[in-house]
Length: 191
Length: 191
Image 1: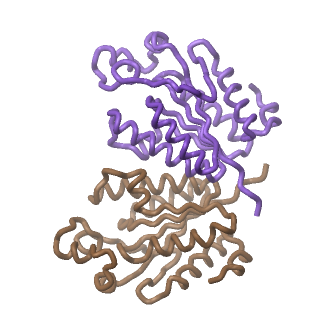
Image 2: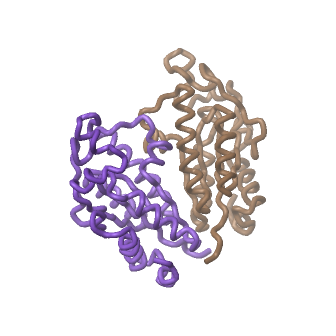
């Protein structure tokens, strides 16, 4: 029996509206037709399926991230390319997840969706920043709750100034470098 | 790229003490050295990692089973042999999980750990039945909470009269029939 391929958890962290779901979703969509095993764990899917009832206190956020981490880990140690998108504001919990994933023999790739708060407030696609600034939403990351940027992310995407296509290329290049996506697959892609 | 292997969720249902964890654990242990992708989702592991805070009301039990089902499904659709052990007393929720797993293109194999309540009360390895009968534990399946036996299980293991070895063989034979475990792997096993 051949040794299974090495999996990876690609972890997208960043403020609400910074483009985590868009970028991770686009990359998963691009990779699926290649036949590589891909799973997308979006924060919203997880809140529905695993974390209903949890709120946004530090404890509840940590629990939510640990659940996403647990599922990501199980998948990655079975060779899956996992794309997890969650605000995940606390550095220590992200570091803990990296350590657990790597201890299981898989890779962890942290993608920091860097975006100026002013730009997010201005865009405000979901109208959440307006409500948070008005005090209508408690524990809103970046407004009334902390966000700890990654100190050593594997990829930085400046989503306030860069196109989605640049972000896709940057993440896929790192995945190719680490051997998770064959170079020829990238070359055939229309990006 | 070769098509990934088809995964399966082997779902062990039965009363507390009926041997779900023992049997699923032994089978996972036997299969791991073969190189097949195996994950064991024991009810206790899941309650720690995904369902802390949930109780034993019907709603909370259903939520717990749906979470185990969600994780099992993600793994099985990526070719993993998943062994899930949970009392899972309600037929409708088990049927729902089967349907969701099969809709994802994986197999579902329900293993009914059949054991007379009298035998479980007599054995009472963890002392739980004694406490439940004394009214010290609420919502205890089989005593103060219902258990709906599977109407059409894929495997029945009569754990009050059969050895663990018989159970192992019965489950592995079904997995071999469905093509999840190569026959030659079974023949080499010391069971």
